[in-house]
Length: 153
Image (cartoon, rainbow, N blue to C red; front, top):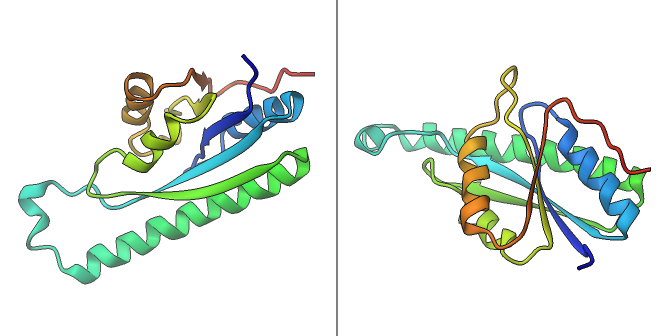
């Protein structure tokens, strides 16, 4: 089976090797790369969500969208350097849940590339997302170690 579409979970804390690894693979195989950045709302337990002012929740949401936007810019710049057909998207994660939009996209791709959670700069909900795409997605999942270097030459 040929790889025609690669779905990449973009890092929002610190850019790890997964994005470069996936774009390198896309360039070598002629695949399209789709980068998804998660805009994560604050992880607030349900029992205390009521008394939090809406302005604070909205400010946290805006910060999540801003952070995701920075990840998208990094992805698009790197994708242009690899000269691959690339698309980028932002998926919002509401109230600590796994992004259903990301899981839905993982069901219609040929390969999912996710970076390993970095203990130095941990990504929010990374292990939960990896588990979700492993058990709810329908494509192979490549978890790229934090120390990986692109090897496709």
